[in-house]
Length: 204
Length: 204
Image (cartoon, rainbow over all chains, first blue to last red):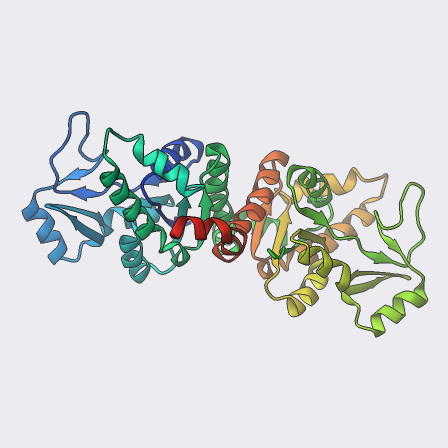
């Protein structure tokens, strides 16, 4: 079986990570985004097992105890996590899996799955980042400043990643993201497994 | 300075390597094909320093003696080789360089430049390969058989390469080749060098 690969994608808010991934998925076969578990309340329009696995705090804590998570975090009163079983299942079925997580989650994953590939997405400038963060709502300068500080904090971990993409032009960034995943599928280990039959045909 | 990368591309004749590379070059910036030295006679239409550096046997042997070649080989009475200086010059100017060479040349290069990236291109089946080798001329079965044997010999080294591409559909293979080069440009070492100014802007 040709096992899939795990791609970790991180970025500060405002870098356009979620839009890029949303656009990428229908462009490539055998590629899925991992669905996280969360204890936060379901919002209107959200669907269980599509947007998140909505879980009670009790269940979530039980899963932590059973080491069921590749990574998890508490954000204010809510828990978010990536269940190992669902990721492994997808990888074993030959699919590549994308995880949208922050640098702390990425660090946890690398420890458990060291051959995962990690990609960091940057905005094209501080100015553009600030503008994008402003556009999100009618917030005061203090709130924007706080978001900028969070973004800088996240970005300060870029060097821990395997690849770096600058999202200046959306379509260029999309092509770049696609290239990283495609190139990985072409590496000798994966191809040797996938092309077993052809290689026998060609070499006898 | 953002140094370029050396990409070695090998394939049996009939795999479509030369057509793929010819089509690839105008598609990507900062990418060139290395021009080899040869002692064989210039054919009508060939241009010195474009198709080959046409060289006397004396000069070629002198260059061998001076260890001026990354790799060289003798094919019947003619010598072919890749001069280290011209490759290094292109790499130092920030260009990626493609070398079209066989497995033996690739082996020599890997020893001198271990961080070069190597790509092997396969035909989609033995049947297609034989058909492509037949179409090259009005040759008898014995000649075709000999070419097939040479192809199998070259292909038996595929596992020494970093990437494997099957040239079944030309445009798919072209996209794959491009992805490997593009993804390599996005790796953290190259990007960190290229994006120095941006990273300072974003992180202060």
